[in-house]
Amino acid sequence: MEIYSTKFHQIRSRYQTKRLSKKWKKHKLVNKALRRKGILQQREYAKKDYLNYEAPQKFSFINNTDEVLKYFNDISQFISRKQSVNLDIEEISELTPDTITLLMAKLNEKASRKVGLSGNAPKNPKLKKMFTESGLYDFVNSHGKKIASSDNKLWRHSTDSLVKGEMAGLATAVCRNLFAEHGIAYDTDSLYNLLVEAMSNTLHHAHKVSNINWWLYYYLDKETKTLKFSFIDLGVGIFKSASFDSYRNLIKSFTPGNQILVKPFLEGKIISSRETDKAISGKGVKQIMDCAKLAEFAKFIIITNDVKIDVKTQQSEQLSDNFAGTFIYFEISVTN
Image (cartoon, rainbow, N blue to C red):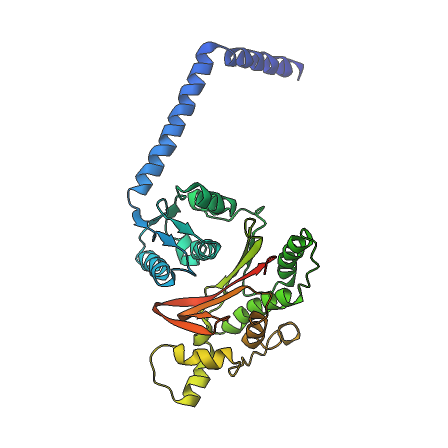
């Protein structure tokens, strides 16, 4: 045993001495450089098969809905054909938090994860700051399995259509703190109820599409002292739910598109008949509409299926493409 121990130390001593030699250090650096070169070559080789797809200059889902929706629907088509895509947003001139939410949701779809997706960041310094702070830049530039940063507190994600009251609680705490910094006591009950209802509404759609995930992103615009909330689920969309199918049959409407359903939707005439989660959810989309009309919400937009709705002005817009999901965007401002 003692002989073995002595030999071991002798071998280790020679190895340590060798490691300190200039030749060894040079050899180590050469190997490191070769490994790095090999990795870079692999990455470049992989990118040769990627389709570079430039985003619209005005990369805002709420301000340029048709063009941005077409961009994401095109990406879905590429994915369905197993085509790897590079999401090129270097030259965009506008970026809003809502688009970041949609981009993250799209990248996390099961089909997207099976196809190579990569991307870059905007050249515009202000837009790049917003993009990188969201955690999305690291996400689109990662290799292998793409997972959002777990320590990025702006993202809130739930799988299997679960309602997460504690997530809504964290979001309302951020809002309460913002108002407190300006000496205002803010009652966040309406915000909390709204967020829980949005999550519960995802549950209501789950009978058509299983395992619907939702995303909640809140962005603090320090310049305007405004919290901008984006909620999204990539399910079937509000107007594809069973309640609207029944209402359409009731009024015997054969009009293409869903704009004919907007007015009764805003008036609360179409109430979901959800059986699950009644203790926490109330009256579904009707309660969301009631919250949206409150003065504390400075802006309130819903995009679903082929319709964009401005709840504050009660105006709607027919979209050129279909958005398979429900997107809710609203703002709460200290100055409102």
